[in-house]
Amino acid sequence: MVLFECLPNEVLLESFIYLDTIQLLRALYGLNVRLNRVIYLHFEAHQFSFQSLPNEHFDLICHEYLPCAIENIRSLRLSHEETPDLSEILFSQYFTLDRFHRLQTLCLHYIKSLGTLMKITYQCRNLQFLTTLKIIADRHGEKQTRIFNLFDNIWNIPSLKHCNLNGIQKKLIVPFQMSSVSSTIEFLCIQNVKYGLQALFGLLLCTPNLEHLSTTIGSYTANDYLELQSYTMTSLFVSFDVFPSTMKIIFEKFPNLQHLKVKINNTYIDGSEWQQIIETHLPRLKLFQFKMIFEFMPNIKRDVQAEQILQTFRSPFWIEKHQWFVRCRWNPSNTIKLTIVYTLPYAFESFHYSNEYCERSTDLAEKSHRVYEHIRYVHLHRIDAIDSVNDLNPFNIKFPKTIHVTAHIPFDNTFLYSNQTFNEVKSLVVYLSMDTGYYQLQLLIDQMPALYSLKIYSHNRVHASFFHLTSRSVRRLDLTRCSLDGVDYLSDEECRRLIDSPMGKQCEVLFAPLSSRDFVLDLIHKMATLRLLVLECYEDPKIFKYCKCKNDELLEWLHHQLLTTCLIVRDQTSPSKIKIWINREDLISNCDIIVPKDRGKILRSIRSTFPRLFRKSSFYQ
Image (cartoon, rainbow, N blue to C red; front, side, top):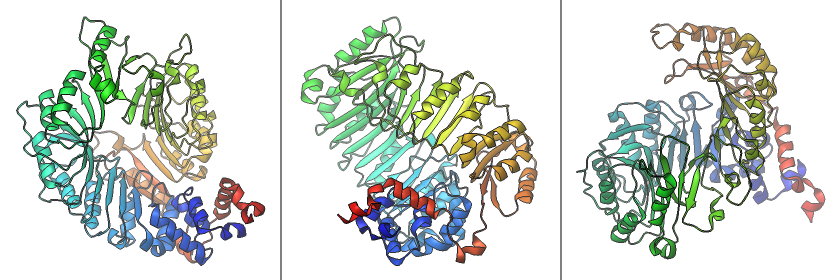
């Protein structure tokens, strides 16, 4: 530890990047004045995250660390996903957002209550330095008027420039009903609210200095007209569900576009039409990326149609002037004659992969586009054996930056031995069609050293093989749909096997359907690392949609059994689910003499991550 304290500030700050908020504070805060100052410097440049916290650690942060660090926090993340009602509890400790008066970036993750979001964004109106706001992974089914009240709050944040509202899941064509105008917002992402052209017109009026827009446009009338022309917009990412004529109306209103990214469903525009649109309306366009999903014409061979499509993208405009190459991809065995046509390299975040697909491209150097670096979400489906291995073998495809994988098992083992790079994957969802698939599931898990979350869907009950799965990194298990028929709950024996299993012993977050309330107590008391239990109980009347009982008997029973050791809430958007946030230490009453038990463990982790920094000879050279 003495050598670690002697390291220059720059080296300490670099090492802090590899620790999350709670690890850093519990390991190093309070050791001496200098380390405290370096920690404050770290939070001026990096995020202070309240995500995935144990109950007792949250209390420790609020009482010991946050009051001292709050002046230095520039970036804050609040997440309800693994910390139920976190923002409400934080505010109840008098840490309202106006106290983070130097805050520049705020990320709100999985906050389901629109009322909570309204309260948070209203407080943001007092933050003079807040330039970035992100609302991600939420679900809101509120009335339109309340949605636009939320927008009004956001548009009144005085210095806001970057705004990501992709977490607002309201897939309706809505009018834009805001009264506020923001002259500061330059970058806006709002993919899950579908606009008509009049709503887009209203959005542009309320955001006159917008430079980048990422949105979804839906229109079911050919007579829609966009009244406003925008000269500030230089970058547009748009998903379309409109008539082709409406698309042309939109493009002609943004003459200064330099980057255009387009996703189109159920419509096809060939290379000649795109060329005419670009040459006529988008003279400054430098980067053009698209994905079009549509159906082949009936009674014509698919490979013939694919060649006809690609031929329209082989003109000098595409190949020589811009070097924009295009690939056509289709499944010859699928009765639905869907095809996907997209620019290379693939520029979108999600991708469905199966080696059943056939592909053709306008790029002769096809091998150069087998690495999909932009993809974050991969769906693996129907991966079958192949006869030979060559440069165009679909198994040579790589997903180096993928963070989420959905896989249908079983599939051909060759795929797992084809040098796949799943080093960044944090989340895995698996559909098991037979019990023998657990062997392949283990092989897949072994390819994912950073895997944190595992969710299993199965046609049968949880098989005995599940309890033998191993992973050094998995800390979150979701078994709520371990049987696809939705009627099976974990039995007493299965709960005991889960507790004693390798993954059960290290599990921190568990989603489980339980046949009896008594098993709740067993899981909480015997799974030593468990900090959040999200359960559905067969004895709970709330699992039946027709139940209108006024009292919440199960919730009252849990409160009585667990007393003050846990925070217990019912999920308001999914009433059959109860969340239990577990507090394993009574920290509050002893906060003046707290010595973090895991400080030595975390320091050993730092030492193993940076071994050379702790060798005296190399340090002093």
